Image: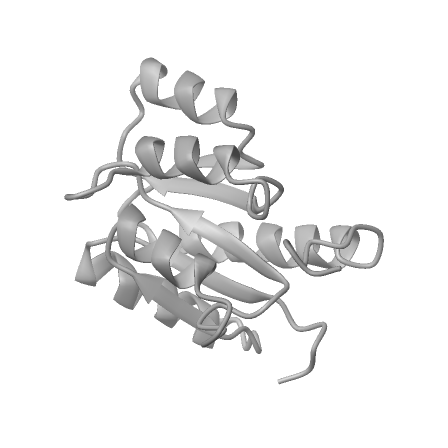
Length: 148
């Protein structure tokens, strides 16, 4: 893995959703390291553990809202309050289309909000968009959060 290769951290407790993400990555032929956390607490632990580098820099977070222990909105609040992680790029991918969830996510500066659907084509479009986002943003921004 090259140092400039972006890692995808998927924060989602749903095994079926994770399988769909992996299928979409594979079907598009993307060379994207994908790491999973099952809730916000586990994701924060991974991101904050500088010794193991569980989630190497640069990374993009793909976040579900509805999870046990620490949900996506709680995760976002803590992430944005952490000076070393506050600039992380986060896309929400969730089943919730509730306006309060959408507004709350954007209040925490998410880069995008995607409502999960049953169609594989939605995932493929989302990953194409993430790939384009990464190609555009990575050369200009140092998203290696916490690295001097």
